[in-house]
Image 1 (cartoon, rainbow, N blue to C red):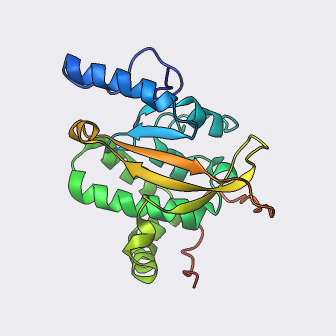
Image 2 (cartoon, rainbow, N blue to C red; image 1 turned 180 degrees about the vertical axis):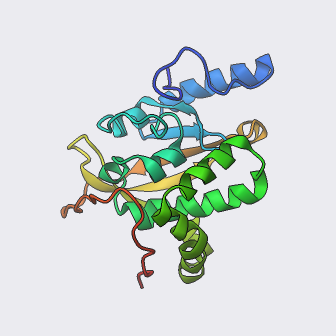
Image 3 (cartoon, rainbow, N blue to C red; image 1 turned 90 degrees about the vertical axis):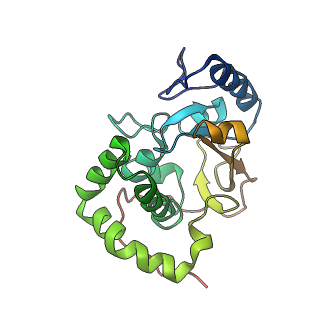
Length: 216
C-alpha cells in the first residue's frame, strides 16, 4: 500500500467523486508503491493525496509539526517545517524560492481557494518570508530565468537519512497522466543519484534569510 497524507491511512484524502476515479487512485497507489524513489501525488494546494514508502523513508527523521508535515502538505513542509533544511539541501535557494514561485502562480489561478489563502496568511506572518515573497521573489525570477523555478527536470540537493544515499542530488520529475490531471492532481518523483564523493554541509537555517545571487 502507498502511504497517504499524514502517514499510512485507510482512506485516500481528498476522496474524488465517482467510483471509477476512486478505483483509479487505488490502482495508482499500487503503481506508486512499486517505484523505488520518493514519489508523491499532490493536489493544487500541495496537499498529499498519495505517497509511497520511499517518500516516507526520506522524511522519517523529521520531527512532529502541527501543520507542516511532509505527508500532509508538501509546500507547508518546505516553507515552514524547522527540519526541512536537514533533508532538502541548499534549502532556501533550491527549494523554498522555486516553491514560492509556484505558489505565486497558484495564487493567480486559485486566489479564492481557502487552502491557498491560509498558506498566504502564514507566509504573511513571517516577516522575512513575506518580504522574500513580495519583494525578493520577482527580482530572483528575473535574475535566474523562468526555467530555474520549474520543478520538472531540475537537479536539487538533499540529505537522505539512509547512509547508503547520504548527501546527494535528486532529479525532480513532475508528471501526471491525463486521468490524474483531470482529477486536479500532479505527481512529483525525486530520482535519487548515487552519493557524490564530497558531502554537502547541512543547512541549519529554518527560514528564508536572503534572496541569493544566481550562480554563473
